[in-house]
Image (tube, rainbow, N blue to C red; front, top):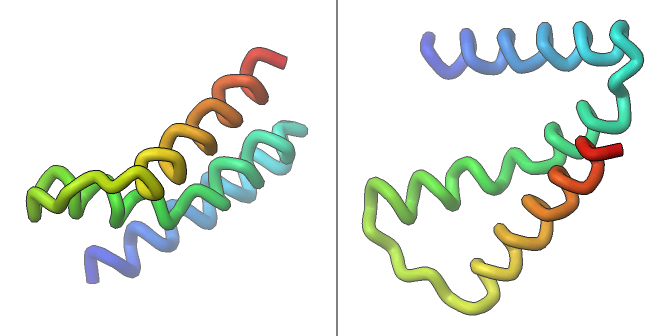
Length: 70
């Protein structure tokens, strides 16, 4: 039930962003959904951060920052 509510909220926010002409930012943020389980795995399950994971998290985070700066 909670996962379905989260998915519905995500879709609503995505549609809202497209109506506010923030499509570039919305698409980039939506494409970062694999980062959420990775961060949760690091925080909750205490998984190790490999070099590949670090690059995979830092690279897209930098892209989001650069896109939001314009």
